[in-house]
Amino acid sequence: MIASQATLHAKTGGVVPEVAARAHVEKIIPVIRLALKRAKISIGKLAAIAVTAGPGLAPALAVGVDTARTLAWSFDLPLFPINHLEAHVFSAFIKEKNFSLPQKKRVFPAVALVVSGGHTDLVYARDWLKYKKIGQTLDDAAGECFDKIARLLNLSYPGGPALSKLAKQGSATINFPRPMLKTDNFDFSFSGLKTAVLYYLRNHKLPTTNYTLSANIAASVETAIVDVLVHKTIQAAIKLKAKTVLLGGGVAANLPLRARLKEAANKNNLNLLITKPEYCTDNAGMIGFCGWLHWRKQNFTPLKKIVVRAGWELT
Image (cartoon, rainbow, N blue to C red):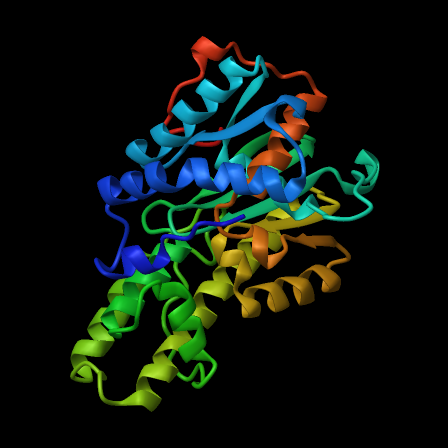
């Protein structure tokens, strides 16, 4: 069950924390009730509850955490606070039918690319829930770069999908920079690409009425971002002798990224697990799955210690 706020935030061209939190308050109980009804189960029959505790916007996170704590206390259930980036790391393992985890030795070690509007991280995982971050964006995340360039092109919200849709109509004929492509580390930077596009638009008088040029810009931007993401991910996997590459996060739904990463993984004899599109953007399914992983390992947190952690980054 999903209650999307995309239409609401389209009015302001982005997420306003207080507006998002009010919408959460209005929808959270009806969504929980409907989800339980569709699953044909009552709260009292659950083994545990999982909730996103961070990172993210504190007002919206607080609605979920407060609701989950109340339900956990009322029904005497364990509550697992989940870092939603950790959930993205392991979201590629989610299956709806005939579910079972693959054998550890077949999957790990793995390198996970978590790429979204607010985060672009590379994570080295040696086992379930055992990992360390090996690279991150130093400024704009890939999804943020998509969104900001989409606004420069006067595209609709959300900008990332709109830019990708436009890119299908164009050709990658513009040689925009690939920031940090050849650096000897696994970090990312996309602010320079955004600035290059801005200057290109200024030199060409902002192509708001030139559909072909706008489409070519979109295609060239998408290609540049995908080039960097794929190259860094594969190089990390090779250097760290990983068996598997994992792809998760909102931008993981991008079709060129999925196709290019698959091609590169095959070329380098790497297993590749890509999160299903419905579990790419932030969602309760991946939070529940990650909660289940913690439940399996009995990683319990006392209820009174569960708080909102807006700046909760992976380590």
